[in-house]
Image (cartoon, rainbow, N blue to C red; front, side):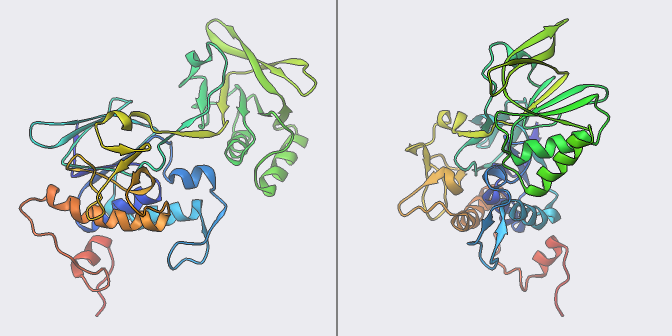
Length: 342
């Protein structure tokens, strides 16, 4: 059980900025996200596409924005709990909330801030009866295998993440690395595709066009994949480790069961505090709704700021919450690890 000041659910841009605003108010935070990395929707859907409406930044990308926000919160040393989905929030007798994840992690905090965007992103899974028995072991979604030494490794997918995974594995000591995609066109940067082509030509990896239609086992382990090519011919592909990148789909998930007032699958909040219908639970970013709501990152930054100032008194009920500018405050400079001018 981890006791903390606030639990932030969601590590997208708004969730990361929420950590920053809480950090300025000296609220200790724990962050939970269902994805295996920070960055949220930006990193999953448009990591390298340009974003033009971040204040003071003429152009950036999802990847660069996430990196900047992570750098901004480094002084606070915030723990992240990634690859976990919040399964339960329960108010305790002392007014704090017990937050539990599907991995069994538990947190106790007076404040919960939901910054889950359009919901928790879940990987699209292979539609093969019985394949789920290998999940977390030989089969992994949106993650590289735990070990590849001497193994036949297959990466299934055709986007940038799949290709990047395959390229990394080709540099290791796997027995073989195969990138399998249903089409001969990859949605990835040309530089990465060129690198793959060189590795294929050198015999260090294989690119195969087809779809997985079945699998075979040996001694209870996943041993081979049945692959149908573009001519419907079947091939048997040996496999010891399978990484699948078939995209992600957002799902509201357990949020709907937490007893919070909702409208069209979004959490209703007030615009002074961005608190939900349950005092102590706040919602910022695309997960919330209110009159005039605009689903923009910059709007989420504004919501996170007001939520932080509304949440801090619940964490420090006996403390006067100061309002100070990062430009002139020695206290904030100390928190951020910078020198006070003059």
